Amino acid sequence: MTATEASRSFAALLDEAEKGQTIVLTRGGRRIAVIGPASPSNGADLSALLNSDLPDDRFAADVLTARDAVTMDGPRWPAE
View 1 (cartoon, rainbow, N blue to C red):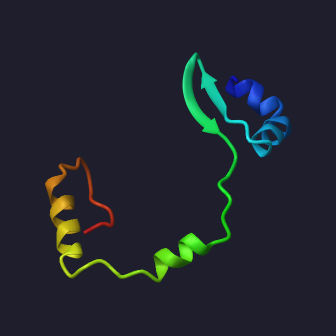
View 2: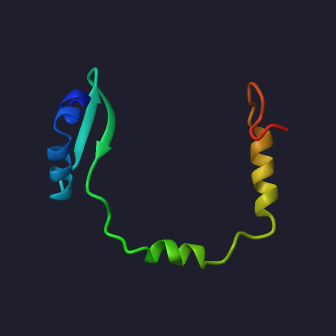
């Protein structure tokens, strides 16, 4: 379905997704998005993740090492 068609019939698109259909949106012949049914969830997965063990002590150092390995043009975020 084109993005234009989706915008004109958004309610119908949501109805299809609610029925279990997956819709691929295109613009200029290129795939730009996929809209489909939401996974059933009651928050239990999120709660389990938040209550799981926190990252180990080396996690922050790993993140900093990875960040420093990336070459960035312009100012860093947050501004340093």
